[in-house]
Length: 412
Length: 75
Image 1 (cartoon, helix red, strand yellow):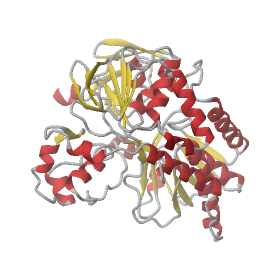
Image 2: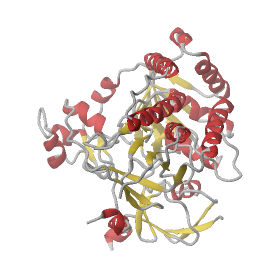
Image 3: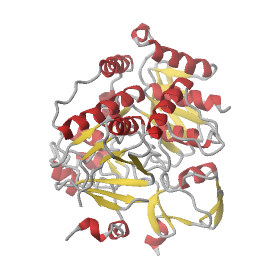
Image 4: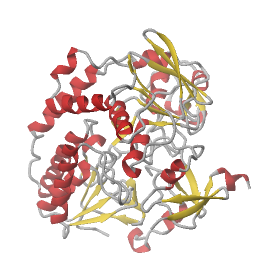
């Protein structure tokens, strides 16, 4: 049945800012998140009694936003431990978990954040190999660094952030392997806030080898990281290896026909980081208010445009040849982690496989993650963008969750 | 509330508000497929009291029976 609320999916900086903008404009909101607390990946709430890890400036900005949301508590309902399965062609939104409903909201703002890109490498499916972001999520919640030797590898500022946080918790990483060479003169054009953040990370990482222009080319069981550096090969024994090759919008499965206003916000629209996400959430909230009232949508704020320019500069500083790294992978390298499909399995599909070949015959993108992890790499090797459109639901659902939806929501 | 859940016959302690994946990792268990840590890769699917869920999203409950996916598929 129709609902007078706007559903905001994701209670990170973008979703929270969108909810605040909507509520301050008089619109009732249902804010849902799969986690048990707000914050998203970047402002992940620590467990009770654990000191927060983030930089004070970031924490202040988030606390101020949460205070505005609290002031609008009469208009913002929250549903945590609740998962979003998508919006169908009738505008119905399926939620499962703590709030198990099929709702017909006035509009939807999707702020699902980023997905972490991780290039395939031989051995990346071994136990003890995770994304660097996953290690960071653990640090932020538990306030404890993992036991044993940690190696961080790939590319991007997140490697330095995670390394600095490990060091602050008393267990600095054994090494940071960075494919780009980001510490040249080009970095000086970044905004001061970015430079100050980088300087703080580097200070905490004194004594930790940060190997730039270097690639982790193989992980051997046991666990050992085999690294190509400009000065020749090196190997690092590790108990845990964190991989990270940047972020991209987590927008898989969105984009079908939808009769109600549906907007994306934050990293899920364009991966520009936490500062931009909050600005973009506000933008999306104001845009939704305008759409619902039949008014013209306001333009993007100048501050968001500045963040985009800063991120573009950051991307240039972190430039590296990913295509060459992919093309150098041995044929038996696993690309699809869900279905254990290798580069050779993809080659066997022929010169220019269609989306149908890739999915039906190759099983690429057919696993439980629906291609979120491997889609970009499969597209590279298959030289196609057509991997077949992901379909609803956005994530695997149990029949028990579907049966738990109240009958009143499903009509006939 | 804190407590412990069962994993392959061992009691895994957890802290209030902690996810199953976090508690397993802190106990040194790393072979349950954790990878992305944010519910996207589906690598860490486990059964919690029989229901399939991502270990990185599921909150711990005292006395819960947590099993690898294969445990029931094989049996």
